[in-house]
Each structure stands twice: as C-alpha cells, then as structure tokens.
Length: 462
Ligand code: XIL
Image 1 (cartoon, rainbow, N blue to C red):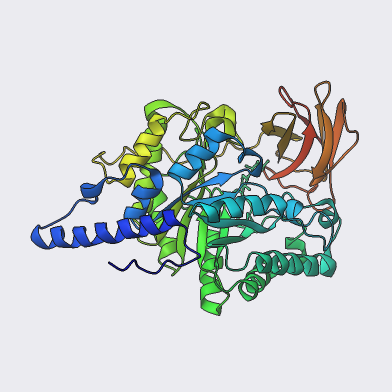
Image 2 (cartoon, protein in one colour; image 1 turned 180 degrees about the vertical axis):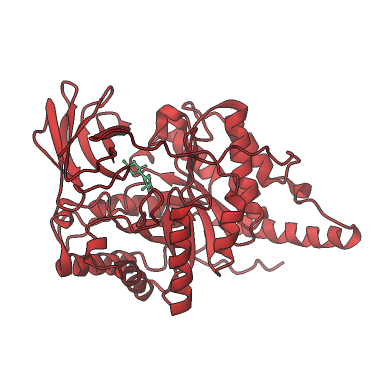
C-alpha cells in the first residue's frame, strides 16, 4: 500500500484528526442515508478539540508563554485544545515596546508550540486602547495614526501565514446605553481608525480572517447594536472584515444573556463568521456547568459560529482566578463545567436551559468615581488591571490611590501615570482617559514585582 503524501506543514496530530473527521463524516453520511435523523452524539469525542472538530469547530484556549514549562499545563493544552490565543504576548506593549523595535520572543514560543502540536493560532490583538507601551500612550493625532498602521502592518506581516484569525481591533465601543465609540487615543485619531486598521491587516496577511472583538456585546444591547451597525457598514462598503469575536466573560453581574444565540445569529447573518473568543464563567458546580453547556449549544446552533476559545486552562491560570471561571481546577482536574462542555459538544441530551434574567448594569450613584482591581499573578510578579467608573457627575480627571504590599514594585504602567514605584502609589489619568461621563468606565494597568494580594484601590475624581 502506498502511503498518502505527507504535507510538511501538517503536524501528525492534525493529520490524524482530519482523517478521523473524514471517516466520521463518511460514517455519518451512510447512517443518515439509512435512518431519518442522526444525532450528532453518534460519535462522541473524548477531548474538547476532537468533539468540536466532529462538529466542524475548533476549541481553543488562551496560553501564557511563561507556563509552557509547566508539565501539567502543557499536558492539558496538548490533549484538549486545537487553537491557542496568546493571552498577552501579541499585544502592542509586548511586541513593540519601543517604536519600531519589535520583540516577538514570547509570542513565537506560543506559535512554535502550537505549530509543533497541530494547533492553530488566534492573533490577539493588533489595535487596542489597553496594554499599549508608554511611547504609544504619549502619541496622538497623525503620529499615532501612522504608528498604529505601522504596528498592524509589521506584526501581521511577521506572522503572515501563521494566524487563523486576527483580532484586528479590540474593544472599540463604549459600555452603557450610548452606542458610542469608546474614547481612546486611537479613537481621537479619527473615526476611520478601525477600517484603516482592517485594511492594513488585510494587506499584510491576506490569508488571516480579520475579526472585530469586544465584550458586553454577547446579547442584544446598545453596544452590540453599534458594533452590528459598524459591521453592516463595513460589509456594505467593502471594508475587509471576516469575523466578530464575542469575548463572553460571564459572572453573576453579567450572566449568559437569554438572547445569546439570537445575537450570534444576527451577526452571522451579516455574512461574517462569529467566534467565542475569551470564554470564562465565574461560579462552580452545576450552575457553572449549565452555563457552559448553554454557551456551547448556542455556538453549535449557529452555522457560522466557527469555534470557541476559553480564556485559560486551569482556574489558577485565569486573569480572574478568584472566580474559578474555567474548565479545570487548580490541580488540572476536569470540573463539572468541563463535562458539560464536552457533553454539549457531543450533542448530549441536556434539555434546553431555563433562561437567566438579562444583565443589568447597576446605575452609578453619587459623584466621584470608584475603582476595582483584577489581578493576574505569577510567582514573583503580577499585572493589576484597574477599572475606574465615574459617578453621576462624571469626571474631568481621576486619581486612584493604592498601597502596594511590602516588597512589591511597579515596573510598567499603561493608560495612567504612577507617582511612585512602591508603597502608597497614586495613579493619575493620562490625557485621553480623564474625562468620563456618568457611569463611564476606563481601565489602566500596571505590572509589578512581588505580590499584589489585598490591593484596595480608592478613586478620587476632579
Ligand atoms: C487580560 C489577560 O488575561 C491578563 O493577563 C492581562 O493582565 C490583562 O488582559 N479582554 C481582552 C483580553 O481582550 O486581552 C484581556 O486579557 C481580558 C479582557
């Protein structure tokens, strides 16, 4: 027997999976011919990637380069997933720390790992208001616009041919009921910055699917309506956009919307793929499991929902670890949420869920501002993301005071300036994010050595 030719760019695992998919497809066709209907559960996979592949979808996870030496982490990654998103390593601060000097080391480690193990890569994110290097934060106007186009072009060119989908623009719309663009330094370069970024990305890597990605757009609301109108306009005018990513970060305050599937479907109806890009659902046990099942079934019910990515592997890997939002516990064991996800992918017979009430954003009360912090910690360091919310009077500027634990020192700050590196630190708005309307939020972040446990921010508005 002659062996089929082996394509050098196809790792063995991907070939096996493809052959399996072909066999399954053929089997399915035969059985379907002989019976009336074939439930997708006819060939239950035993991993997330295999089961998703049987449904013609990918199943991905965010990956952190510094965890690729963790054997438990890599064991689960290689067993369960066939798509990876670098969690931070392709962001602007990571890839272009000073202007026109590009550093791809950590992103390359993830891409190389993916390629060696038959996984594809979602690129994240080319143009975003957050996690910008300091030099970008200090630019505006045409200088910033050219820097943005150069960044998109250089990074997408470097990874040309290696990226399944790029999040070309991330989080460009404001929360709340206005349907407005988010105020940011990029937005201030002119309303056309998004389409300019997409055109630059297409020119640099014509093979990658180009996505717009956002959060709080998972159900129908003012923000998702605004994104919908933009995508519709882009399609009508021939601006190159292929997909819309729905981050899908859920918790009690922001539950899986009752109209999640309908919302995915209306975007798909515009002629774009939809992808669930950063899924995590805070909670535990059967409630969390039910929600994961709902999300998976919603995607499977939408033909153009091409894949699901969870935002990390174990709860302890999560950017909001305290909410235990992922599919594996800190020890790497499968949680009920894992089983519900796998069963849903295998077309298990879980009945349609009862609906949860639609999300309600608590209205801002009083003047001033408030701040909350989320931590991403590792041994010896952490990244703190601080969300500032304006009170009823709005802000002209804001200051967030934080006392760092002994031994903790700030090494990098974005979207704010810091008054000191240790002890009591005041973070002040930069030029483009001081002015907030009532209830409007903005985020800044910093990276530090040491530990960040117990950080309690307090916000003062001016
Ligand atoms: C988060 C990462 O998970 C953290 O490690 C980092 O400190 C902050 O960013 N929306 C996005 C992601 O598009 O890039 C964010 O990732 C989570 C929210």
